[in-house]
Image (tube, rainbow, N blue to C red; front, side):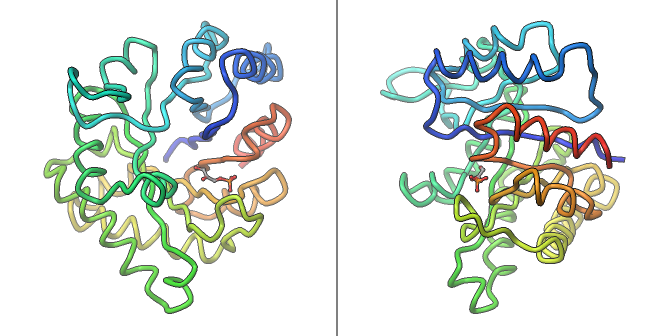
Length: 254
Ligand code: 13P
C-alpha cells in the first residue's frame, strides 16, 4: 500500500512574506486534524526558511524545486543538497519540464542531480513527460521511457525508498487541460513497468508515481482513484490554501 504524496510546486511565486502567509493558511486549515498522506510544499529557494518555520511542529514538509549536481564551491547561483538538508527540506523536485525547456537541462544532468540527491539522503521527485506533438504522433511512451531509463541506469542500485516519479505531460501543465484518468493510468502503469525492469516487482510496487498537469480540486478524485496514481504534483492549485487543502482532503477520502 503506497502512501499518497500531495506535493505543491509553487514555481517562481511567493517570496518569503507571501510564502509564510500561505504556509500558515495551510497549517490553519488542518489545525487539530491529522492526515495519512504526505503533504509537501516546494517554495522558491529563498522562501524555504519562512515556510519551514511556518510548518514547524506540523506534518507538512518542505521541499526544493531544483538542486545542484555538485557538492559545494565555485558554482555561482547554485544550491546544494547539504544546504537543503540544513534548511529542513526532505525532497527535491528534479528535471521539471520548465527546467528541461528553459534552462536546457538534459537527461544526463538530471540523472546526476537525482543520484546526488538520493546519495545525500534526500528524496528525489523526478519529473518526466511528453510534449503535445509527441503525444499526437504516438511517441509518448518512447519519450518517457528514455527520460526514466536515463535516470534508472545512472542510479544503478535500487533506491526505491527515496525515489518518486512525477508524470507531467507538458501539454497539461498550466493549460487547464488534464490527461484523462485513463491516459494517466496507462502511462503510470508503463512507468512502473520500467522501474520493475530495473529493480524488480517488489520495488516497483513501492515507488510512488505522481500525476502533474492542471490537477485541481474538481479533477483530483478521478485521477487519484486510478490504481497507479499515487499523488499529485500540483502547480497553480497549490498557490491557494483552499484548493491545495481540498486536494489533500480528497486524497484522504480515497
Ligand atoms: P499546474 O498544476 O499549474 O498545471 O502545474 C503542474 C506542474 O508543473 C507541477 O510541477
